[in-house]
Each structure stands twice: as structure tokens, then as C-alpha cells.
Image 1: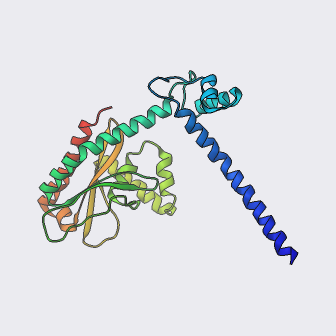
Image 2: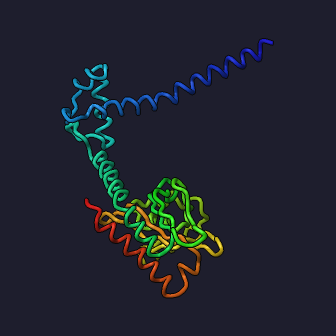
Image 3: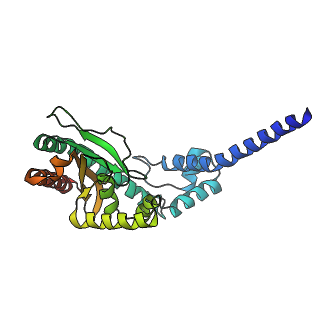
Length: 259
């Protein structure tokens, strides 16, 4: 009877230890967030004394956090906001610009083409649907839910990976493919970069999607796509016209996004 009790006690002790071990890094992240949150309209630079006083830390610990944040790029050597924060602020600002500009353009494009228009940003493993303008003509409407993580070979994912400036992001996304499939997908992404347009390869008979990039300068920010049937997007002059309207709409938003 005593052995199970000791076993439960041991497991409890081990679980408690694991919880404490896991909590350590989380506490460090929480503390780093507390330090960065000290910036406001009146505090443009931090010091060990200021951090120590406001967060109740000893001065040595406060200094150690500042040095770590500086080393990670969150702070400059003068303990002012660093390059990583500038990068994140720029990203958020650009995304907000795209989200503000896109709806009117998407509505106009959908009305002209009679197709659903979708806008996506890059997530961890593919495009994430952020805005949808559904077609209002016709009895059948093709659509996709906001928040959907699209497949690697979706048109919008291909656009975002093709123009991705960080090769590691693309490599991580392609890891799930076999070596032969990776080579084929890399060739497809090269084609997207050349043509500045991407087609989905999702093996869905009768359905098609095509996407174009939205840029800020040389950096891709989002992907805009048309969803439709294969004939509407791939057959005849009208289909080619729809694809060109998509391209022009994406370029128009790019021209409005400021640095």
C-alpha cells in the first residue's frame, strides 16, 4: 500500500519541478514585458535606477534585464527603443495601412469580376485569411472563412513565400514536403517571382484561385486573390482580363502603402 503513495508523491514532486522549470522562462518574458512597458510619452529612455525603482528590483537585476534586452535588439546601448521594436512597429503600421486601404479596392474588384476577393497575411506555415469580399452576382458563391490558415500550395501562400526576404521562413514551411516536392515547389516559387502572380495547386476539380502580391517597397506585405471556377479564371479573354484586374488592384494598393 505504501508504494503507490510514494509513486504519487514522486510524480507530484516531479510535476511541481517541471512546472517551476517551465515557469522560469515565462517569468523572464513577463519581466521583460514589464521593463518595455515603462516606455511612455514621458519616459523615452530607461536606466537601471528607474527600472529598479518602478518595478521593485534591485539595481543589479534591473541592469541585467536592460543588457539582455539590448543584446536582443529591443533596446539601443542608450536603453532607448531598439531596432527590433522599430521593425515590429513598422510591420504593424504597414499592416494597418493595408487593412484600411484594401476593403474599398476589394469591393470594387469583386463587383467588376463577379468573383470573391480574399486578402491574406503570412502566418507561421502559410497565408492566413484576413479579409473577404464575397461576390454578389450568381447563385453560387465561393468563399473562405476569415482566420483560415491556407495550404502551402494555395495561391496566396505561394505569393507570400515567393517574395519572402527571409529564406529560413520558406525552408521551414517546405520541411513537410519530400526532397523532390521541395524542388518542384521552389521552381514554382521562382515562377511566381518572375510572373508576379501565383496559382493554387490544391487538386480541387473545377475550382481555381489566383493571387498577386502587395508590397511596401521591396517587402511583400500581403496577398490578394480571386476565387472562382476554372473556366472563369483560366479560359478565354475574359478570364485573362480578370487576372489582370487582380494584378492592377494589388499594384494600386502597393502604390498607396507608405514607408
